[in-house]
Each structure stands twice: as structure tokens, then as C-alpha cells.
Image 1 (cartoon, rainbow, N blue to C red):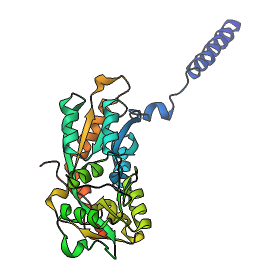
Image 2: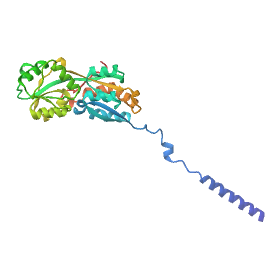
Image 3: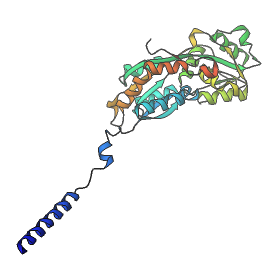
Length: 289
């Protein structure tokens, strides 16, 4: 009897120990079971672009959508086209969005970029005081060279970007051989928004891209005095920077932005930008030619 009781006690002890052994393994957590694939790590790219894409409000609409769709954050540096392209040459940007086709082609020909494509266009306009002291609207409504000649002849104040931007490059082409020196010719060395404000303060003429002017017109005492000249066409292009320049260039992120800008979905976004506010699109997409 004693042996039976001892055997039963031993069996009970083993069962208790076995139960304790099962409980020593920690149960799997919900996180371990349901974690799934972690989201991709957020990247950052540097976009060097012209001030008109910034001042018009276009980037405020596009860039958050790009980041949401790709998890790539965009650090924007808005300068004149000349400076933006130089940043690409120096390897200080990953991707460029600019508007001077000749400079863009030179950038690519010299081996600074990998891809280039046109994105959108609008046009340049000549704006000035509503009093129009040079009488441009009545006589030179669609003749940019004639309008500038009249401004020079009457020494009417004119504010130039004077910053090697795409707008400044276009202005110089429009002046051609026309003399444009004197106190009336004011070199601002500033972006489009600041130049429009300066022209407004001085009641002067200036050359502007249409998008920036329309986005600011309610705060300006300036009106369009010359438009429609075929020489005032304003094409924008996107280019990726050659990653061989240095190991800091995020080419994959730049290529993602490049592809996104010329995609059908983004082109449709660009086509709609401005219609609800101004009754017209501020840019016309043309990535597909």
C-alpha cells in the first residue's frame, strides 16, 4: 500500500512538472503574427526648379501627392533655371524641373543627365501699369519685340529678373539687338513673384510667365499689355542628374519623380491645375509630345 501511494505521488509530481514545462514557452504576440511586410524606408530627393513652378502653386499641389504615392520626400530649391541647371552640373541636386530648352539640351549633351523629357508649357506675357504709359496694348498687343522697343524709346520703367532664369533668358532673346540700358531698366536679381511685386510698386513693365501672374493678379495693379507672340512660348522639362557625379545623388528617387511627372495621371493633374480658380489651366501638359 505504501508503494502504491508512493507511485501515485511520483506520477502526480511528474504531471505537475510537465505542465510547468509547457507554460515556460512565451506565446506569440499579435504583432508577430500580423506584422506583415514593413513599409519601405522614406527617401528624400533634392529638386532644383524654377521659381515659377513654386510661385504659381503647382508644386504645392503635386509634391504632397508624389510623396504619398511613393514615400519619397522632395526637398525643393526654387531658383532661376540657370542656377538650377548649375546645381545639376555640380551634383547638388537629384532632379531638375526647368524651362529653357537650349540650356537643357546642352546639359544633356555634356553628359550631366541621364533622362530628359518635356513636361508642360504655358506662355510668357508682358504686364504693366493699367495706365500703360508706353501705349503698348493699343499698338503692340501681340508683338513682343515692338512692345519692348516702345518701352525703351519712351524710357518707361521695366523690371528685369536679371537672374539667369528661364524668364530672363527669354527676355534677353526678345530684346535682341535693342538697346536696354538706363535708369528705366531695373535689374532685380530676384524670382518671378518678387519681380511682379516690384513692378507693381514701381508701376513698371515686366515679362512674366502666365501662371505666376494669374496666381498673383488679385494683389497686383498690373495688367497684360502684350500676349500671343509665338516667340513667348514657354516649355518646361524634367531631367535626372547623372549619379556618377557623386555618391550622394539619389538616382532611383529622381527616376521615380521623372517617371511620375510624365505619367498620364500626373499629366491629367497638371491639365486641371488652375481651372477651378482662374477658369483656365495654368500649364498645358505635353510629356507625350
